[in-house]
Image (tube, rainbow over all chains, first blue to last red; front, side):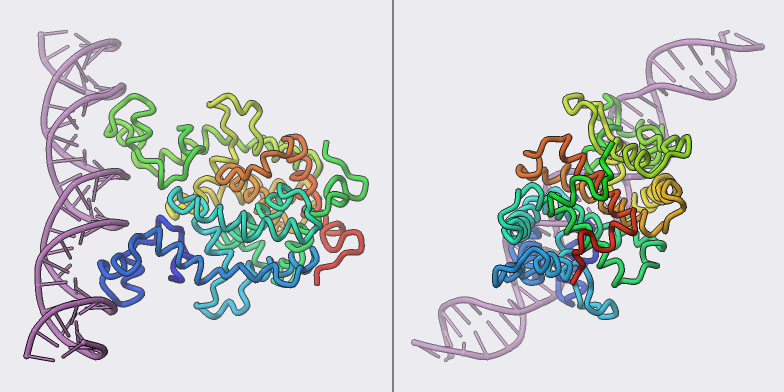
Length: 180
Length: 180
DNA sequence: CCCTGTTGTCAACGCTCGATGACAGGGTGA
DNA sequence: TCACCCTGTCATCGAGCGTTGACAACAGGG
């Protein structure tokens, strides 16, 4: 199950999953019905996003919560899988795309937009795209220069970037600087 | 060739390429040597990133140039392929990862860092991760809410986000707002 | 003319994949 | 005891993949 967070959908074979679980391939398939169904169940189990908007949080709190989904609490623990890794690892797989798109839209973009006073949902999608890029890049490439930045600083950079993306006033030209 | 910009490396079979070129599968393989070599050649041909740092541009110019790689000049033209699509489409494919990582690091991150007065390369990687997230998200999901934003505005949002990410003064708490 | 290299095609190989169907143990309730 | 479902294995299927070798057509140079 955790495998889907470590490698893309297409690279995760039923045989890998079966081996990790110590059972036969056929059983994995029979227990869930299909590979896509396993992926969907893994998303539901490992990415419980329903409570992310609990308590009608304000924008900053919401972004803080979303960043929780991106950073491991304890990187030493193999089983500490962050939901966003599950979402971003398989973004590019055609089979998993629809499932992921639904999660992104309903479980993240809508609550985020609401937390910013029903801001333009497109802006929420924009912010989330930045976030997913960061998660993917860090997880896949793990550029040494980026990893050299202390995790707390990385998180602060990310939170600020998302905050700026969501605040129209901030995003449209900061400090007098304007896009050319 | 253009296929690699439209779907991930793993979804692009030699048979697809051969069919698009109107030749036999075996010939495609024989002409290039291997699938990975085709991909590398496609990157070199379609993503000429060497001149992106020509003339020692300042930060804003550099970001402007990089955004050029993300937005289609003429979306109606099938053959108008943006280099960044080639880079981001196959980020998650294990076979293509190393090739792409090299392009990102040497052809984009380093010049970007240089354009900002030899800023922390980690910060350049951070900015590029946001960029690749935007490109991927937009190309793959194409959320209606995001596409509803005029392309000029999208571009401005993206440029501002990258600018903020590169400027330490801006990124670490804008307008008095600080990450929790 | 022959020799050689290029441009292609064809059939096939070995491999991995997701999916299926047959079947075996092992509890559990009637 | 018998029937029944759940758990799990085994062998196998058909499809798609990258790759390979044999071979044909054709040109250019000597």
